Length: 142
Image (cartoon, rainbow, N blue to C red; front, top):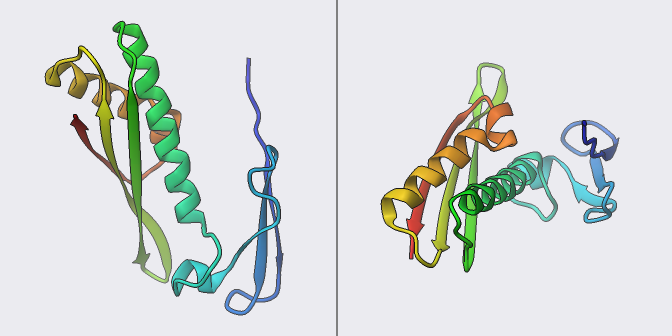
């Protein structure tokens, strides 16, 4: 059974002065602005890299919750931060890395089991499988 999720963008103008809007099927984003200045100059608005980071962090965290459940564990709290690196690549740009930092409070789990679960989830999270960049994970059990 395939699950299909939808998102859309509208863009007007050239690459530098043009403006875009991002919308998601869920309504979490509805006409949210993005553009060159937000992506490359730190202006207000979103960009593909932060959206990928949010998607990757949320995917990984859910994958860890699933792996924890298989071992009989439940997280009290997990917080995952993503840092997506966009670098110049010849004439264009490429996403070179997605670094995830996870802090987790999980009652009853030992550090070795936690690390094994975190690495299994990193490898099997659907977004990790599709990203062609170096993916690193620092996982800390509190």
